[in-house]
Image (tube, rainbow, N blue to C red; front, top):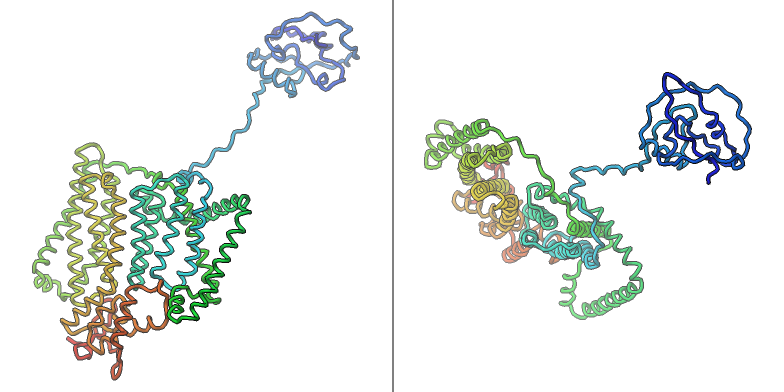
Length: 635
């Protein structure tokens, strides 16, 4: 039996006849302060919710069971406050709060409801586009990926410091293996498109091994990095193809941290295996150095072979080689981290544009189609022999007419592609009739734009006949030709469907194939070939421009008579004999140029290779040309 009996439940006092508190409540509320629990104030009798509703009534406790306590001093009691009867749930909540040690209501004042305790909720995670594309952290990095990354770094330091050639392909092989081992450990399967992108990237790195010109090599390396990002990410849409290369830069720091964790995890259990590996490597290197030095001293041919195979690394090149080592290691680890946990670029979805009505959407495009049709009609007239009439009306020369229109037509082609993209975004999408309307209007625009592309290429051909071929002209002509291929792909996608054709991937394949074909075709060789043919026809040639070409132009320039041949090849010869490059940094074009110059030595006796300039030359404004006797050409 408890020492303190609960007070009997009473009805709340009426507002018309208030009554003072019962004496029994005062005596029961004044307990001895022998324990903290007894010292807590209790609820007044007018608050029936201080006791659970299910508490049974019990008889009064005997006097002996309650220790005597002095009577409290009389004090004025607060005025009674009427309150509505609380709900049973509030009574149980306050009873639970009293049992837990909370402070109860003040005597004489109405009890207030105490809400139940609720733990603080965790802060909501930020849902942004960056968090949506980030994958889960990958598992431990495999040991094979670490060894491949180390091999990539070592080859980068040894081979990439002397120039670009076959060494790029040699460095790319262990880097590709690093990504493959990481992807396999993460459970990613090799898909057909992954093989296409990977082989395409390796094929593009063949261009530096074949060609000496720097600009096709630059385009090939950039395109190879783009295909590598597609192979690592596996993107399908436009955003993944365009933004994929940025994922490689995003994986540089996580890749280093990932490799560091893998090394720390393996360091604990591999302490007994590190020493044998180091001893074996040291013994093998020592044997190669000792016996290799002996054989090189015994035979001169073997010494030359060994000298050409082993990279020539000096102490002064230490910082440069160290930087290449770091760059190779970072690139391999970034590729491995991307292969194991690529960013999900395809999860970025663009909100489709609001569909327009048929009249609002189709009317501007139909007007544009009519404008293209009128322009193409004039172009067809000119292409089929109407130059005399057009030139007589405009007052332009044959070459000026061709030069004036090419750049405008190139921009017209680019803007047409932008118009098609925006038109597809706001095209009506109500049903089959809307799809037929969109295909008809945009298909007609693509077809008319192809005629513009053909007219631009024809103008460039006329311009080259008048002024000769240059690097800039062959580059923009190749760009215009690729834009025509993109227009054809758009027309095919309109017929068979963009999803079935996989239009983003098709455009990426066409771009990579164009860069590969551009590099294999040897642009510098084409420039030299076309200018030599022009010299054979007109007797005019710009030797000052041709001598600035790369070794790719040597076979065509070798056909020139002396002293034009020597003047055109002197810069190429000086670049080749100025520095002795190792075999892995020499392109096939440089090897052929060296053979050509060695077969026929260059002669400069009694001749000045830098002539006066005249009015020919396109974008150079002044163009020095020779006639067939070696004098400056004139009309």
